[in-house]
Figure 1 (spheres, rainbow, N blue to C red):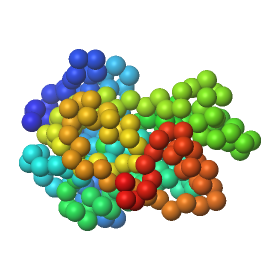
Figure 2 (cartoon, rainbow, N blue to C red; figure 1 turned 30 degrees about the horizontal axis):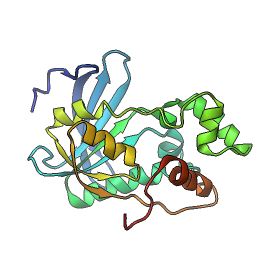
Figure 3 (cartoon, helix red, strand yellow; figure 1 turned 180 degrees about the vertical axis):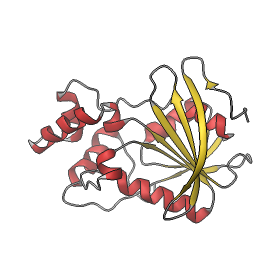
Figure 4 (spheres, helix red, strand yellow; figure 1 turned 30 degrees about the vertical axis):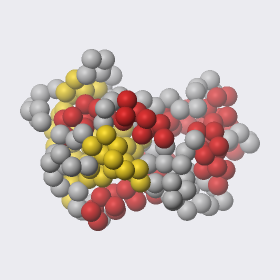
Length: 210
């Protein structure tokens, strides 16, 4: 495991470790690790619990920022409940990692996300709204995950996700995914179409037995 005082880099991405602190939450006291992209200044965090660097698979969640869902309790998406469920599962197990990546709105940013929501109010689905704004359906990159996990001494995951792109991205980085654990959130009148679109157009896996 590299020194915590040195930047962690890859060939095409520079990510600098900043510092760590304790983060008491409703479920457990996590260790919070701060990172910054040296090229853009964008900040990301990792929450760890227990010994995650012992070489055994780590219960993990890669969570892209969603201000509306994570902080404002929006029912239009499943992001907030997924974040809460992942933290609860890690706390119950007593060991795990959550990477919080600043990739709002599947990479389009907060203001564009508000524009996309307005288009959804007018009848577009979540993919169509992004495309009408001139964006791809999903602009997120998971290249940051590799140096973050390397810094934390993690090479094998039990990944909590419904998104097969995350699994593929990890395998492309030679990060082993020993287990795929779905995070199935209860549907409501506001997120029903959103979740169905994620399955039909983005290939998300939302069956508990998959």
